[in-house]
Length: 434
Ligand SMILES: Nc1nc2c(ncn2[C@@H]2O[C@H](COP(=O)(O)OP(=O)(O)OP(=O)(O)O)[C@@H](O)[C@H]2O)c(=O)[nH]1
Ligand SMILES: [Mg+2]
Image (cartoon, rainbow, N blue to C red; front, side):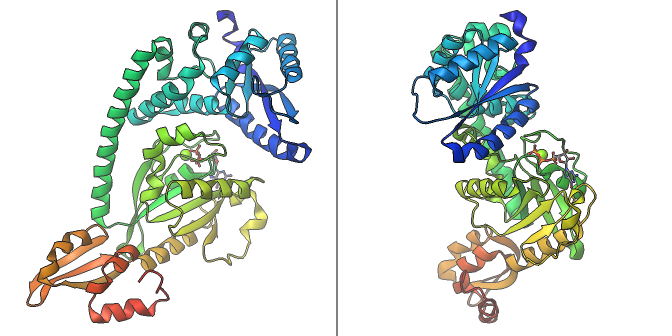
């Protein structure tokens, strides 16, 4: 099989549409799979789509389609088939048995492969290895030796590879060790996060579909030098930079890993601590590629994932990016409070983006005086979780703090607010958080 190592990169893509009406969406998803394959260094030779009337548990696609796929692979000397949906270990085995000299991988394995290629930090690499062990390894039982000889082709890369040949017990031990190591790294991350929290600087996460231009925006604003390229999942490790705004206000901006439709659950789990950056932010910049006809669908995927990560309720600024390529948007009336049109490449619209951000920050935070009676001074330390304490004094009627609090903090400590501050906060529309 080793001689196939070079040509295995050409692949047939396989999709399933539930019915005729679902064909268009199936092709959109296959377009994306083609881009994923391209990012992994492969090339889509052809597509095979089954409009499925009934479910075939053994091979997912019907036996006629399997035969068609086998014939095509043989005729064109192709040795890789990428299925656009998750396959069970036994389905992969059955398909490989039927197809002969063709490796079968699914969308999840392809994404994992790209993650393996792009992981640069220690944590990223460990996360990939863990996900590979948990997902890929059981799917490769019986095919481990062939694969190890193929080595370095799509679906086989990454640190997990050597583990695939080890016995189950060894894998279990490795999984435990990885989980322990990752847990430790997560606690370091939590410590850093706590330090950022104490700084009281508002945290803004740049989130959105993969390739929307998140890293380009961070680079434009902060010269962060993060890799940005026309590939999916160029960024796996979050990068945080401080951005100084006018009036001495500053922000912590974090570039995050991109989202994609059908993001495998095990990957969400493995990359949870990375993905969760969004959940710790105070404000979300949701980037949308304005040139992509699928922009709206991407936005829906993004919002759903944000919800799953527990970040659905945060203040959001929608940022339509790449407007340099969509001249009609350049003149669009910026009617909506929560939407801006920019080009992270040319800087168009970035000023108004910053303006909007600043006004959200100001809405979010208020400087207040809190007074805790001595009987309740145990609560004082909790104030630090919600903002910056500027001064603290011990007075006759209790502990008095001057603090800049976010919305949650204002809600939390409303009972201790100075009379005047309470009246002020009541004035803003915001009975909802008070
Ligand atoms: N024309 C144009 N291209 C842009 C703009 N912003 C980003 N790009 C391009 O879009 C591609 C993706 O940009 P990235 O910044 O890597 O996107 P990302 O959202 O960080 O992507 P991932 O990290 O892969 O999720 C690159 O080729 C950028 O040069 C823009 O405003 N206009
Ligand atoms: Mg990026």
